[in-house]
Length: 253
Image 1 (cartoon, helix red, strand yellow):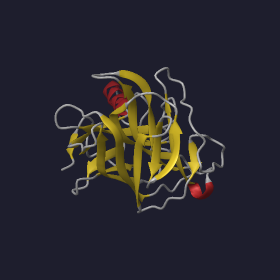
Image 2: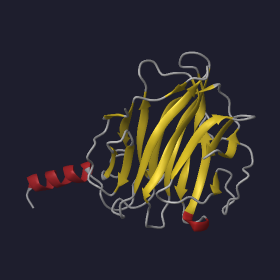
Image 3: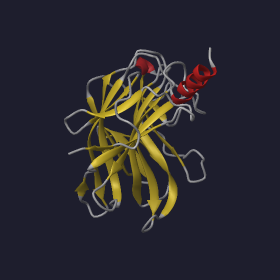
């Protein structure tokens, strides 16, 4: 092998990871869709999105599809109290391989505490609870005010509350976090009907989302892709050639 071939081979290996397990610190490859608003981001007290697992995973590895928000207090940038993520999981250690998670971390990086969920948990995890969900069926995820903190729900069923401060939500994302091998069979989820409620009760919707991918140097897979589906929704795929690059604005209208 020539010097040039060695250099080119090293460049390709640094720029791509399409096989094997993700090399990130948590063992997952993540890709995100950040909500973009028309003009200044509104002050929000509830956010919601519909997720549909179109093509479910076929391997016994953890997959997590979530709606995420930061908890903020005060005007302007405000005081940060951390953030939480609510979503469906493909989890081989839960009954039927399906679960729901509502958890998060405070501004100090510590895991947030919360109320006891009415849902059981095969693993006794306060954040991850047993929940049967079906591929191909849309589920409505929401983060909203609770009695003593911030709650999350799936189709109106409250999972639990997180005991954390803040009087509004910011930095809204939806995302996929995949603990499978980069070359495992492809899976597909669809995000649609993104909406929010402001502090004065108005229903508002983001005009676009912006793609973010965990980079190969940070341990991510390079064969994930977030793409518009032509109906105002966005699909996230694993195990495919990337057709929409990072920092791409995807209109939702």
